[in-house]
Image (cartoon, rainbow, N blue to C red; front, side):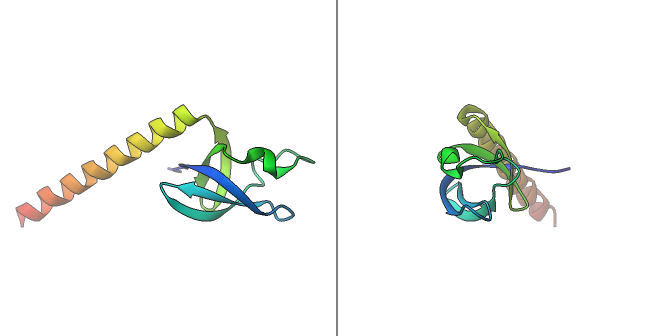
Amino acid sequence: MCLGIPGKIVSIIDAEQQVGIVDVGGIQRAVNLSCIAEPNTDLQQYLDNWVLVHVGFAMSVINEAEAQATLAVLTELGNMQEEMAAIQEGES
């Protein structure tokens, strides 16, 4: 199963290599934008767009509502994992 994490493109650091900085929950990482970039377009047009990031690549552009809904589900899953771990620790 592949999991894309929503992030927001905040800057372009290397237009020639199609690399930008994406903010994912306050953590900023360099991400390859080649999968979303249209040929012969200025990457600056993608600033402030939400994207799904998987293994260092922006795989698709999504709207903010979809990004926020996905982040909420991921947070919920994380909380559930913490609860499961606490239950398992209590069993030992």
